[in-house]
Length: 535
Picture 1 (cartoon, one colour):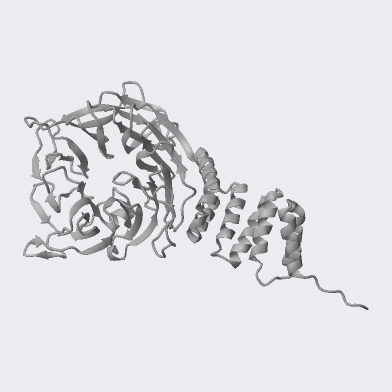
Picture 2 (cartoon, rainbow, N blue to C red):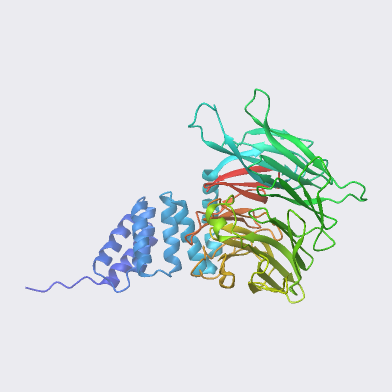
C-alpha cells in the first residue's frame, strides 16, 4: 500500500493566509485550525490570524480565545495584543481592550497612529457607559470641587436609608452650588456667594462646614443646612472673613479645618497664615508665613495639633493652639511647591483616624537653576530624627532625582501618589520615600516606557495639565488614583498595578476633580459642566 504524505504545515498556513486576504474568513479559520492541529513550532502567528478571521466571521468569543493563546506563547508581541484588544472590544470587555491596546503601544510605540481610531472609539463607548450624571449651571469654568459627606437621607424613621455624599462646586462666576452626584440634580445654589472667582474649597465633615476662598478677598464659611420643612440641603452663610485695613486687601488662597479643634486656618496672598476659632471675632493667630507671597501649600496634621505652610524656599510648622513656631527649615532645594502630613496609621484607618504622636511632613521643591525636583520627609515631632539643639535641621529622607516640579501629592493606602509637572505619576509607601517608583507618563495620551515592578500601577498615559494642583485624586480607601491629562482624558489606576478601564474623554478639559465614593469620580470643566463618572 502506498504511503500517504503528511500534510505540509507551511502549505496549509499559506493557503489560510490567502483565504484571509480574499475575505473568506470562515474557510480561512478552518485552514488555520488544520495548520495548528499539526503542532507547528511557533503557532502564535497562526493563532493571531485565527483570531482576526474568527472576529470577522462573527465569532468574537473564539477570537478572544485565539488571541489569548497567541499571547500565552508570545507575551511581548505587540501584534498579539492588538488582536486581543479588537477581540475584547467585540465582546464588550472595554477594560480588557483598553489594557491590550495600551500594552501594544508600550511594546511598539510606532503603532500609535494605527491604533488611534480604535482607541478613540473605545473611549467614546466607555465615556457613554461611565458618565453617571452631568451637572450644568455655572457660568464659566468650574474652578474647584469638594465631596461633602451628608447625614442619612430620607425619612429619619427609616434606618435603612443610605448615607449620601453631596458634591460642592465653586466657579469663576463666584457662585457655589450643591449637587446630587447620583442624578446630577442641583440641590442648592448661591449665585452671589462671592464677588470674584472662587479659588478653592475646604470642608469639615464633622461640623458640616464648607469654606470658600475667593479673589474678592473674602474667606466665607458656610453651614450645610436644610430649609424649613424642606429636606433639600442648602448653604447658610456662617461668616465672611476678611483682613480689614489693608490696601489692596489680601486674597485668601487656601483654607483648612483643624481636626477636632474647632479652628479654621487660611493662607493669604500677603504671605500670612491666619487662624480663627471664633468666626465672629478677628483671627486669634496671625502667623508670618514662609515667604512674602501666598504660601504654596497649607496643611494641618491629622489630629489638628500642627499647622504647616511652605513658600519661597522654606517650610514652617506651628503648634496650632499656641502659635509657637515648632520648626523653620530652609533646605537648599529651590522653590517649595507643596506640603502634606503623612501618617501610615491614619492612612490605613481613613482620613478621620486619630494621628499617632509622631508625624511626618513631606515637602516638594523645584530648583530651576539645577532643573531638579526634590521630595523631602521631615519628622516634626520635637526631638525626633533630624533635630539638633532643639531645632529641626535635617530630613528623614529625600528623593532628589525628579526631573520636574512636584505639583500634587495625595494619600494612597499606607503611602501616597505624587504627580510632577512633566506628567509623571509616582507611588511610594510613606516609610519608603527613597524607594519611590515611577508609575506612568503621558502628555495627552502618549506612551511611556515599560512597566515598573513593585508599586507601579501601569506605564501608559496618566498626566495632568501642568501646574494644576487639583488634577490628582485618590479614592477614600486609598486603593486607586485618578488623573486628568492635558487632552482632557480621565485615567484611573488601581492598586494592583493596572489601568482601571479605558481613558474617559471628558470633553472640555477638566480643571479639577474629586473622588466621591469607592466607585465615583467627579470632574469640573472649563465649560461650566461637572461630570460624575462610574469608575
